[in-house]
Image (cartoon, rainbow, N blue to C red; front, side, top):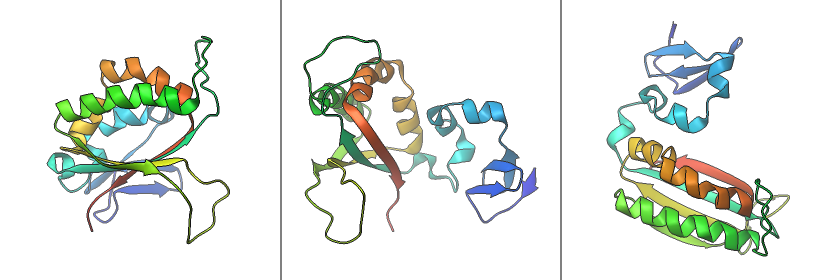
Length: 164
């Protein structure tokens, strides 16, 4: 392990390292195969004691024209319709666990900046804590509804934020 008190994530010459604010642990190839959600459960990923503070995630969503289920099932749903099956169930789970939807809406334009393709929708969700987010996201209940999320989305950015 290497000491470094200044960075939450550090990429050295020999590969990525997870930091707990004091020490860095080398990430092995096996660790890289772990899902990001399993790493979220690791306290070292959340630096500075932020595990118990409100945790906000900005979601940028791009929908498929037609839902495409990995299991090959036939569907007449649009990507947006398939995603809403997931989103409705997910919102109930988030509220039950103490979270809330702060904002959700269609993206109309990008007045400043250039992008190749505009995202379809943005949503800002607040979880009671980073630990709650990790617990919810890695739950069996969420994995059961995630099939609709995957079928509906052509792309997604999930951006962790904090108040400035």
